[in-house]
Image (cartoon, rainbow, N blue to C red):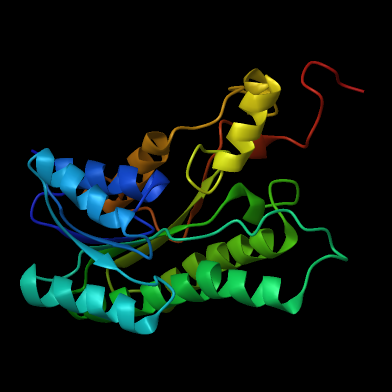
Length: 262
């Protein structure tokens, strides 16, 4: 039996990358998928899952808007029997500006999307989930939120905040039956990281992508989607308040030149 049969999932940032891969996988596992993204490409995601026999609907809108998130949850409640899974996945990288190049605008824009957007999703989903005493909330953080070296300062700070939201929300919802966890991807080929991969390919250094992790490669979005599926399903019924690194082993070690221990 499919692991999400009869469940309804809201997935933000579902126009590409991890969000799209998760929407397709969740639909294959029996979920009704409400896919949210600012990009019109989210409609393509829903077309793709329907072509495979899945069920879903697209909402084009800002995932960091309380109204858009509220509308998605309301749709789940009204037309699909209630929300069972919230995957707050939408985010942006903000590039790699240095400390002295950063501006207030850099911080404000990135934190609104990456951090406030996640909070709004957690809050909106938790209300009906608490009433039913069940539900899974998943947040996309990053290994950049665990320690320095995997992203710019605003991005890293925002992802550390996402981890904190997952942990504190899990405890504030104690006894409710609602689980809240974060996934911390390492380098994954998505729309957000496309410039990194394109640059490496143009230089002929594609083989060096992911060289600092023990698996020595980048992840595919589908590999992150599998972890999201586990957390969304009843298989993860005792997993709560966790920040799970899915990074090929990158965060298991301090940075070193592989094979050279000084």
